[in-house]
Length: 579
Image 1 (cartoon, rainbow, N blue to C red):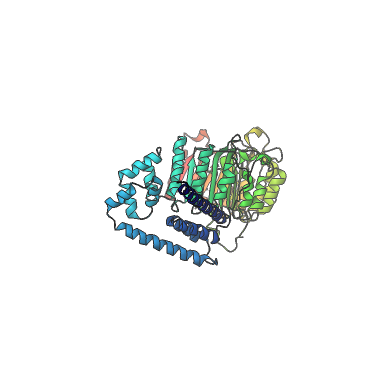
Image 2 (cartoon, rainbow, N blue to C red; image 1 turned 90 degrees about the horizontal axis):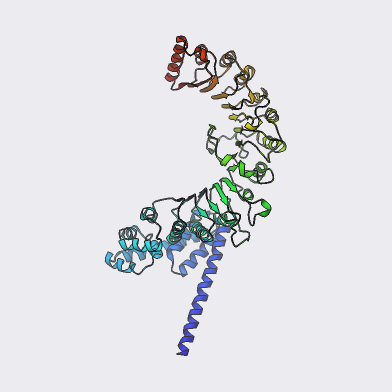
């Protein structure tokens, strides 16, 4: 009896040692894949370990991930392709053998399989997937393992019919855990490319670990992760989540919060590679200052994103970070195309150029590098004072196509200083400009004239917007004349500010230029001038008139003119709007 116990103890010890070694080897392989996602070595090692454990589906999943990221020029690519074909053929052969069994026999076998393994069985073939979905016992087993998940949520995922996995809260913490646990059970999740989470709490350590496991299970096919109004523990979000997202192209944290009182247990620096990331959006309600952040401060992400194209920052949260954020981003991300720094990191609805569209600039005349869209909109652009703004404009004026500066004003630089700065540089490719206006806490205050030379330096302008609710910017007849003479490509002109120009100025504008103008928003005192303006602007489709003098509103001639103008614009496919 003692000898039997001794032998049993020895066998169990060896099995445990072997299992521990396999786990350690798999962890090493996973680190290799995350460190070098475009190299075949990590995928081959991981797949071989899974094969030794008879987990062929896991091996095939790893090999397929590798084929998606490793270049055919890699020395080990042919070996990776060979191993994929061998494992796939083995699975097909075993599946054909199992398909020959009657459904009743398969159900008897499935009776003794765990819910986690049943989910993996659902990915073997369409036949097994259909059998399990139609089998009530399968759903009973899942309801025990994942009591808070509903069939209507699980079934599309089990059928592998969706590319987006989303959880929209608020919801019970147990439901969040079950949903994340489901992803871990499913294993073969290469069909999921996007994760969207909203209004959820990840500050609980257990929930945080499940989130990390879910991301690890899906990555590297995963290319988009979006968090909206979520709470995280002190450093979980950046140091650990990002270390698992080497394949991401889009990453968004929208109105998210980091709980300063909940720290993850580890403060070890994580290896982060975000070379595939092209879109980053950071809108954080609170985060600690850089010198108090345990592992990775949010704004340090820039140096891990050398290929970043679109960057969106929340201007309210950004003031908590010392230093010039805009210059830091431009320096760290040489391929940056769009930089948006606004409230909640949202794209202004008034911008007509598509902020994220990069397809149209295919001409060889366009430089391969250089910022194209710059949007700064906030009541206090702290951290980008006189030196910061000057440096940004100086470094980007030759490539900018969209310049959107609104609600401007801080102690470092006045609106007048900024307007003079803009008129100092050439903007040869600028297509859309939103003239900056003073922020509300500066009004009532001085009026600022727009230098006419600004438009002399922008020959490619298509859109000009001067929307100034605080009436801090002066638009006079001479400015309208400068726009007409210097902007032959102008398509949209919006002027909503205190009227310092006259009807004669608008008539002169229509006589000197505006041949390509399609949309005009302006103030006119006398309706009788509308017909002349429309006749002189043959491409005009939409006319939006402000401040029509009430003294003319009851005259029949005015009504006739308005009706005539409206009919002309309607024939052109447009409309007349009277505000």
